[in-house]
Image (cartoon, rainbow, N blue to C red; front, side, top):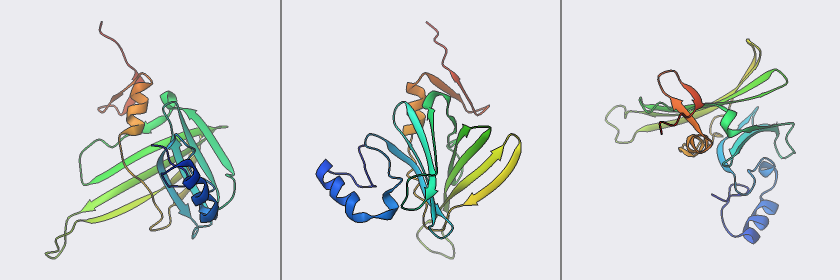
Length: 182
């Protein structure tokens, strides 16, 4: 998926769209990257984005409309990623980035509650946030602003890890190098 500023289309249209849209596009994924997660904090004054391509995952955090205050790039094969186990009414995932002894765990969920009081529609609630830790100490938990979460759940990050030679064990929730039985 080739997207810039959250818009897909020809390069000229993406350039025009990005130029006119303004502040919220500062953290837009680069061409060739897939957006895994995005949200704002503190009434839209801060934002976080997780993007990836086939080899690298990127965490970007900072003031809305400005260059990121913090960018962490990590090889997809080494990325700490917990995929949704495939059961339950809530689709959830975590991805963690580490730098200088700090760990930034981005979490997201899509809760699909059954209809209440005879309603026909399932109630969908999307939420997320970041847990910042140093070693075993939790330093902060940031909860995304309601309505700001973009978590277009897919298997693309899982597929990228597998393509990098990693296999997931759902029992232990751990990734390890795949072993060939040839």
